[in-house]
Amino acid sequence: MITGIVITLNEEKNIKDCIDSLQNVCSEIIVVDSLSSDNTVKLAESLGAIVIHQEYLGDGIQKNVGISYANNLWILTLDADERLSKEAIREIKSLDLASTTHDAFAFRRRNHIGSRWIKHCGWYPDYCIRLYNKAKTRFADVKQHAAVQAQSPKQLNCDLIHYSFENIGQLFAKPERNFSSRAAKIMYQKGKRANAFSPFVHGLNAFIRKYIFKRGFLGGVDGLTVSLSSAVNSYLKYAKLLEFQRDPKVLENEDFNKVW
Image (tube, rainbow, N blue to C red; front, side, top):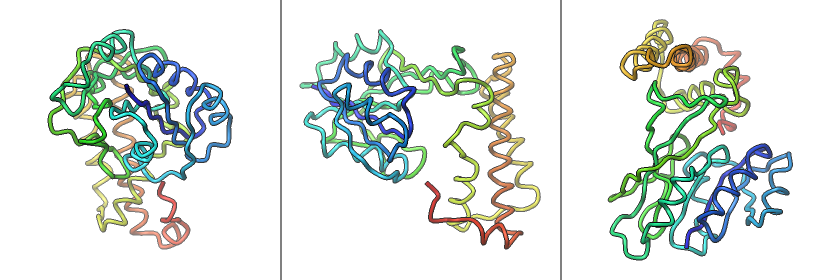
């Protein structure tokens, strides 16, 4: 038996399809909602999910909130914009979780812009552990880029489907995903400092890494676009950090208690 856990914030467009996907393999669904102002909670409850209300604590911490409410030993965590592929459903159903020696299982993840599957720039196979034994492991209690800290995971031969962005515009400016500002605040709080060359150097490095080393050039226009978005995000992260250092007015007006 498996418990599905989803963290949400204003995900009324996604939550039904996500829960429907999880119900193929899960006996219960727990939604940890970050005080949504839309119909996310109402939709989740109408589909039989248990909803836990929790102000957002950061990525890994938030994903672990639902564990204490789960009745099953095995947890399957999806983001609201992720779905199980038909192959993943069959693979999960074939697992002998009662006797496995593995503490977790990883899936390949197909990341999309619109309906386009992005296969380059490091966006595929993008392995991520999402099915895990709660008695043995869980997500790291960190506020960003959290991953399950498994000791003996196994990679499954199947995919999760991730509808990352509805269009190219969202790739550069998706609501509630202001990564550069968040990262700049975190770096400043940790004492990291930038110089006048940092934005350009880090932006260029991000582009080269995605477009050349991650073979974004094989992805045509989408590969170039993803590489450019990575460069812009990295540039802005360090430009904002530098701004905190050199402009007291900006620093004074920034609320560092609201990083998340």
